[in-house]
Length: 296
Image 1 (cartoon, one colour):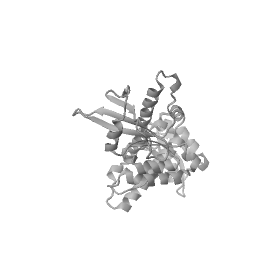
Image 2: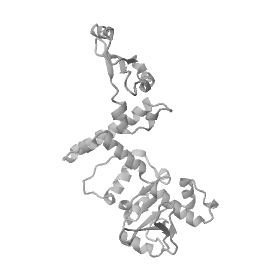
Image 3: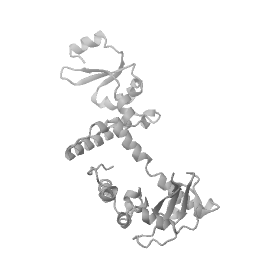
Image 4: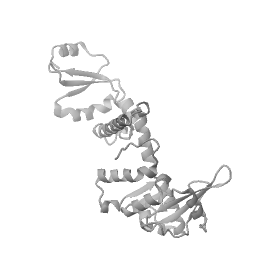
């Protein structure tokens, strides 16, 4: 959606607002659309100023409080701790203190878990979601629970825990598939260019999956690494006419993905009147003669 390069020492607290503003511009997020967007952010974007900015823009927020000291003070107001069945040893509870410092109503949830040294590790979640919105997002019916308040509490925490998997997986896939870790530049402007080229490569891979993968093909679930390493490395032949235009593409019939790619590639290049076929590992003599004579 948005790629933006910052200096190496930049923290999320400094980058949060510019990143969201860039996303607003890219996606054309007006006021009505922003009210339907949930920002799930870790503690780096959970400062009072950042949360209030997001709330004032109309976003829904589910984030971790930036201040560890404030989290410890808020956790002291919890009167009932509930064991989290999803993570042994973790407990959660409603913060009882009023959240008057925020520009819109929010609820806060304290989370604690024992550290190896025996002390409590404490964090606080901040949520602007109503119970009905939590139900909608989680597909859980609170009315069917014997303890709706407890279920609402745990569902908030589960929603927060779901925040990062897809994003981190995408970053990891791009880094491995395009070898971005080996392409780092010392010059800031050069690194920006590497970042933009990485974004272009990512989009090409996504487009290629749409072009090449049928609904029943496992290829539609491949990440950048498998697309670049396995799919894009199918060998074959290009046969050109006398003017250097591609007329035939022969896919190596022994390549693992050759048969899978045959039909979608034919559809893709049909408007250009290019023939695609399965070829043997070595080019036949007739093909060589045709190529030399400029027939293909």
